[in-house]
Image (tube, rainbow, N blue to C red):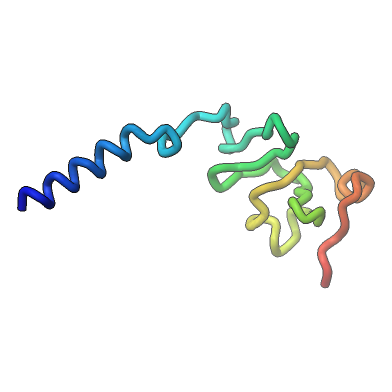
Length: 96
């Protein structure tokens, strides 16, 4: 029993001391999203509530309008006001 308690205490101490395990605010906006300063990518850490009418350009370059079946699943995206502006940025429409 003592060995189990010692192992548990050691695991807890390591978890607390590990800086990689500590959360940070990351400067998230009201939707739980922020822009990566290194890449310029806008992405979310919580399920986003995208502003109405925002077109999402996924990491793979697909432009998803709010009517797209994959719109809600697209979490890591760059936001555009219109499908046309998304396409002009090098994006493409979903297949199908």
